Length: 419
Image 1 (tube, helix red, strand yellow):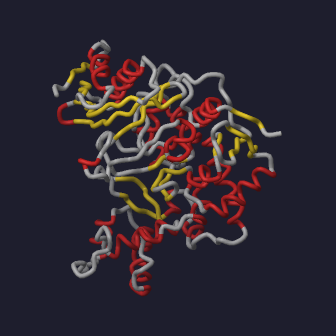
Image 2 (cartoon, rainbow, N blue to C red):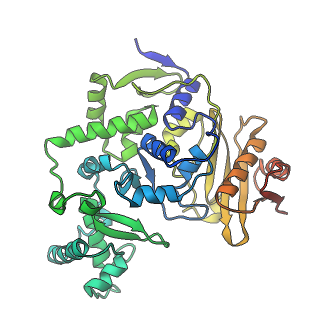
Image 3 (cartoon, rainbow, N blue to C red):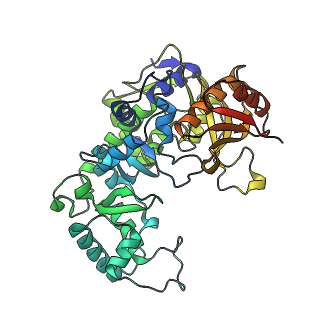
């Protein structure tokens, strides 16, 4: 007989798996704590939007509070690597032990050079690999200059108008032959051989991994990791985490059920086959509080988010401003075992301000939502080294939030923006 869980129990399992069920630890955040959080999440998505903070920094703030972002830079830039870049849910920092498995299952041909003339692609690729094997890590622009590559792109616009060198770099990145050694201040990748990132001999990465007999085992490992990160979910939830295809992922789920790693369960109100990972914990209560990045792994799969939390969420960055409902960079606000509000945030670094440009409460938001959100905004301002929180009078939660921020009495001052 399958285990029967309520939606609130399922939420608590999901929050515990993501490290969001408890009050943040007191005291300074150590590198070990950051490493444990990343190991729990398996990946963090990368996005170039920097209206508040780079997206891969935010999940650690959500779970740990005020931490030193340089810890992540060291994890991604020193040996042995604790994290590296590759395609996963989208462009992501992943655990290096997932790299070979992901190379077998990721297919992002649209970002690379698959449509280029094969002779041109091969020629540029061999020169790129030689330059990176013998030289320092370089950006696409630096490699273009290093190779003396010149082309006229006015007649053929390739999406982002990348030149052949950049397209070949993305092709080699997808194939797993090159990786990012680091990022520049403007967030450009500095490319190098994957062998150098993983501290391996170059000949070990001289060919794309064979997609033969090990492909099924690789997918089982990825789905198991996704299920651990979820705690509870459907086939679609698990496949979406690393963006693996549904049909092969279903085979992997069946394998994990047979092996006892996934347990079929029933969740009241969730009308899909649901599985609980054997290692997933069910805490008695959820006491956490967090602002969640639009790219946080808890909110990756929108249907899961709505089924579990009754929270309908869309990222409106690419929606024309007059058609936006909640704002440009809107963060869901998690309080205990519910997502109770959403707030449109912007870091005005020049003036030292954290701007809450709009704040909306969910229909069932508890009475202390504004007070708790104000405290979270104060903490975020401190983490971002901003002096004040400014609340605009937009959204049904804004007046109460402005009052709560003004009365917070913290070391970071606050003010209400006049309508």
